[in-house]
Picture 1: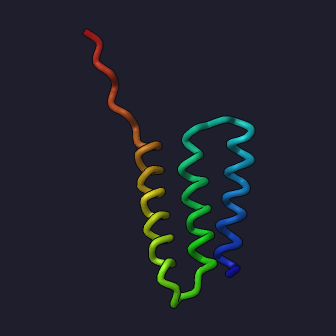
Picture 2: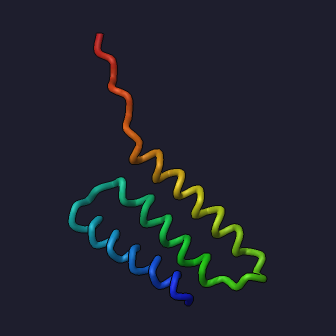
Picture 3: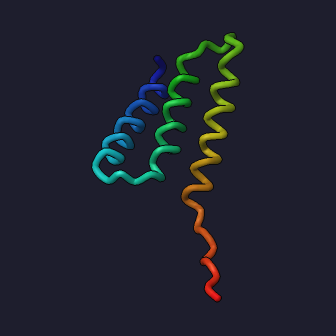
Length: 77
């Protein structure tokens, strides 16, 4: 595993500990993002699956954006 992959695993571990303590659901896409990035970093440059892991991580990053974006207030009539 590369150094960057180790960093992703470390961030994943911190996010997992934070999730266990707080049960904050918004941390789940963050954990998925860093898990996918860690897997992508373990793949060699020539492997055909490496771009797919990065694409999956990008989609998880999009989920992170949607979970942390402020929601418009609900209308009350």
